[in-house]
Amino acid sequence: MKPTHPLPVHHSWPLYERARYFALGQLHGTGTLDAVADMADLASENRALHGQSGWWECDLAAGNRLSWSSEVYDIFGLPRGAAVTREESVALYEEGSRAAMEKLRAYAIKHRRGFTLDVEIKPATAAPRWMRLIAAPVCIDDRIVKLQGLKFIVPDRD
Image 1: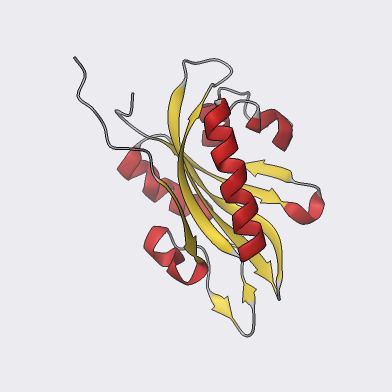
Image 2: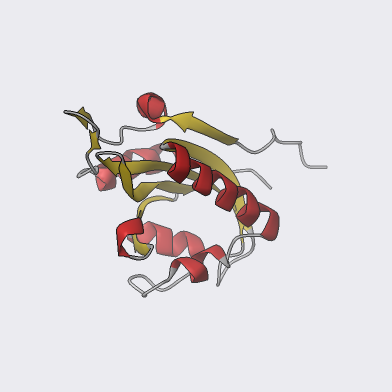
């Protein structure tokens, strides 16, 4: 019999606590949260701790256009560099996980908050698995223009 594992991570957090989860830029002046130039370095550090890990970004101002590191394509079992829409990527989430992610995402955008969530995904070319999603908004003045963060496989979750 496999040992039981803790419940999945599922919570929202204020932007001022983002350093507790990962370094997602610095607050400059009045209301600008810069995008992270070194997200790839952060993903690399996270990979050393958790294994398969990558960075991602969703450009809200450009119709939810996705940008992923090669590792995120691998996590979802998709060809590296493929043009993937947000609708196509969320279709790879298990239904309950997708609903929880969409709820936290909407809350994050409405209230300028980051979130951390364990989700079950159904990769295109692999067995279902658990992934930790860490996200934080990128703000210009009072407007959220992007969400960005990390995704990594949660080891020994199944």
